[in-house]
Image (tube, rainbow, N blue to C red; front, side, top):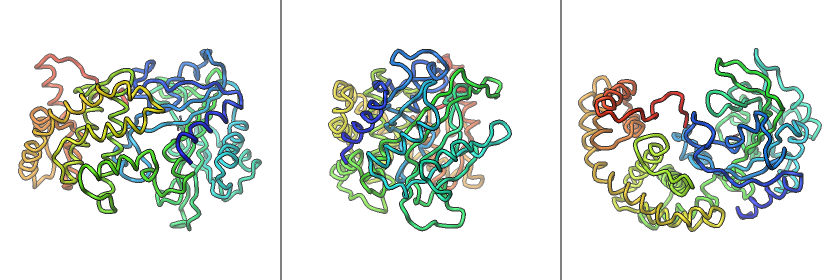
Length: 444
Ligand code: GLY
């Protein structure tokens, strides 16, 4: 199934069931200063989940552009991404668990033709604050799942939100595709990372608000918030092993092969995947209506970090040319049908990438040499102190996470708190003012 068809089928299915279609919001949230990027489809809907009336009504559907950097270290496996598209349908105080579960199952089994036997689901097991969600368990049984397909898990697995420190949240039920392989061990289940299970959909029963003091209170209305990652469901529907084999990524990988002359294979798959994932994220962030550019603070810092990490990984493929612009051009061609803002911003995107490459590529080489020297100097403790990490940042433009990654590859660590102190000292001296990057209230 082509991605264009999958997007259309999803939206039409929910439209036929009374949902109004919304456009994707910007990647930079309007209504939440505690988060840098839109991390889920529900993010722009927070006021409405809290009870404000939405102009489109109580049933909504959309495909939302999202950026999450919390999982950046997992990018390179088959299913984690910094940028992704989330298919979402919502009930704002309208239907609840029963209809949500019924519609999800119908879409998966009747529209996408995924056999019921290949589905497994997880349900919130309850804790001291919120009771076990037996209602959801029974609903799954009523629609035909067997006991062996339903798993109870705790808060870590089956509770979603809030996106910042406070806000709407609740227990969820997650739907997994089970590829039918044998369980890898006795405890193997949907939360296992052996590859047997792929999470495809998350239905959150959003009926709580997390308050400033950490307590939970009931929301004015019971909502449903669902999120299904387009990359994963496209892969499942097409029987692919991982998301990178789908049309959302494979042409990018081929472009990188063509530009570097290196073939994609088992030994370098992580590098190719990181490059294609990060380039896609950079293109979407630069192409967003909010026109984020690489800087040393907030969204611009995340963008810079993503681009600089890409430059290093391309170098690890043995390429020292500026191929960012050509990869980005390819990505814009692949996506501007669905996201015309990318085509509209083509020159802007390519210019900003070129500029970032020019400003970083030389200092990367010098900085890597200097880093080697610093690591040698601390070979006894294997801890790079804050002062040296700060020098790599200040002189060579190495984001702290970048230095941490270099250190990790050698089995070293970095004194990040020492780095933050140096950074703050420097800020005060140069009166730059607070950048927000080390503000613990800001998630990304
Ligand atoms: N808001 C549901 C999800 O992101 O999974």
